[in-house]
Length: 407
Ligand code: HSE
Image (tube, rainbow, N blue to C red):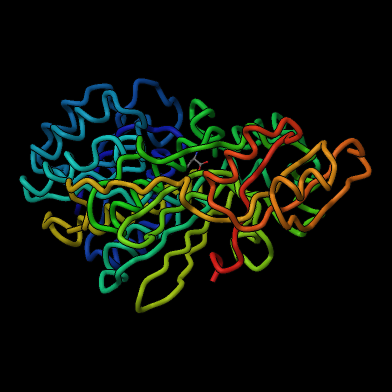
């Protein structure tokens, strides 16, 4: 029997305990032995629940238990998750985590520690919830030169944008619902300001391009400035607004960006609604591939963690390799990237044409008669920003995805 411990019994940790219980028969059949959660670490008490019987408040009970070979870290945050993880790896235990903050901040060091001690540090659940994207990059796509990773990588913001558009809910109500359903981070600014998606694209890009992309280098904008008018314009232009996280090879470099984008129906990511996430990966041999599933929530995320635990047990402690290394990936400036921009404008069409050139998709909404919306021609971001910064008729602008980006 393989013995496992869970550190952190919140939404995901409790889900891990539940999945191991709920699917114990199938798991035992596939692994060849039973997998038992022997210990659960948390500061809280869990009276009357299955956690109560295995609960400890002392990390040493897990660290010093020779029977426990794999530990799940679902505590979140950096402290004490980093120290605990490091000590566990040094003690020869595999660690499986959903903690994207920790992976993005200290992943390189923890992977090196794992390699040095002949164990694994696995983090499938850190990106895209239940979508098996890390293993896909580490295994199925290892023959590829990857040219792009673009995803909807945050369930909370996708839920907010979808319910604002489809149900006319306001931002605060939609966020509250996402929190109630266990999708949002403890501090939801991490979701709505784009930081969570930023960490995830940094992790996926590090694996895709082989190196270390620091999340601190990724230009990041959240969805807090998106309002009901923007959503109405998007609908009038037969588009959706989605928080996209992208990294793409261009020439000899890579650029990365997290930002709300207006995307049209040519892009399959427009159909990704609610808490669902999707990741599009382009390889030079395979072409465009896409992966879809629940991006947040207890059981989907727990499923990804449990898959990692099972991989560790099946590998009997042998380390699982990945292309995530310490060589830094430096980024090209996003300002060079060319695309159209959607602009809300309170000037005249003539002024807009004079400043931006051949504008198109001119749209007036009954509800907002004092302004109109339009699309600029394709232009470099720095060119657009330079013009818009000098133009006091601009109310707001949003990047518009290019048709060929979706292919
Ligand atoms: N808060 C995150 C999200 C949880 O909404 O996607 C999953 O990482």
